[in-house]
Image (cartoon, rainbow over all chains, first blue to last red; front, side, top):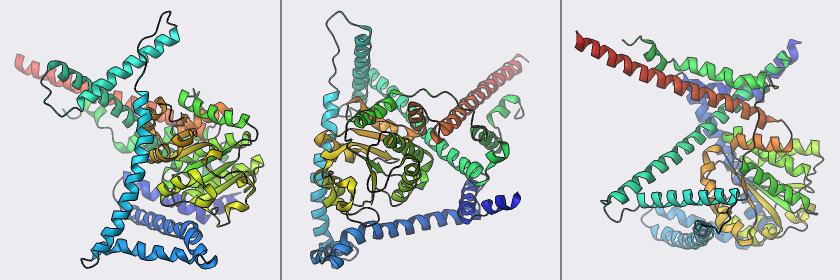
Length: 222
Length: 288
């Protein structure tokens, strides 16, 4: 009865995961060497895994194999282009890095412009919402209109809060900006609540791993 | 003065709180029947409906699952991914996995493989893994017009043209929907470079911490739906009528939130109680 259970507990994959989880959580009690060891282990593993994956799934399949196996030797040109980036580390060859960075910035700027237009033009368009409707107004329409008014008021308050081009002396502007700040605080509060949700979900997952996957406590209870 | 009940309420030993927290988290895992009711949010319903609509079309178009998550956010992202994959498999919708994190192809494959066995899904025919992609901006720009030419191979290095699932998939026009499963700020790239071109429905599947970023885009109609963290996974499972990890973790999460609210109230009672006690003591001294 106990032998298979012990065998399960000592399975290297599970045992390493369990010890790693406990070691990382040990920080909540106090800083310790075991935590530091596993922190470095995790970073090293993640970096090594990332490097290996970059080679097996990206560089080999998209660059090395086409060049060496399929004979598309034109791909060899990316080596000098890539090496030009490293010119930034020497005064003598810094001009090379400037050339390649310039090319890269140009490409990136064009892409960002396209992305900006596609991303934000619909946002601006969506901020124009109907505020009135011809009677008779149904309950649903009333709800939509109320929502639109709330949206407009909050949008204006927050935009005015971010108007730094002039001093906000007028009491109307001052109070609107203050209301905008309150609304931003409410939004930040909601974001903070979401942050807690993520952190707790990650903790729950690790506890789940320890109790169910490793210790298999549910088997003893049922 | 420091030993008053009010001060004790404000300075509970953190180790006691950790133990209570662990007990609260463990309860729904030890007693699987203990689940709280889940009321799916509208954003989850919209995401669910988008895929249901795709499933009604025959043949259904490919759905692209873009994974940006790694082991560090497995606690949320894995259950979201599992819920969406299960819906796709139940509707017999082909899907492709694409990853922007080196760990992601293996993590997504593990989930797909486990579900595929139960749902008679075959790799290469019903689903495929494009693997890890670097230079994501260029990759996204490329797949808009030519998926096979841009990605070239699956994650094992086999040419995409050799897979049955890719027979009629050439550009993003052949993709029915995209699900962006992410713990990072990657939504902008898809909105800016891909989805707006052919109005491909985009389902945003973020960790809870990233969810607020998606709301303005949902309001403007640029996102078809949002599946938020484990709550979203729980919503999804509830809409499918199953109880898997998403439901279990959602229950634990609700209990943790209840504990946090209780402790915030307790701390505030302690704070206001100690202030009141100090005020009373000061008044008494003045009177003497």
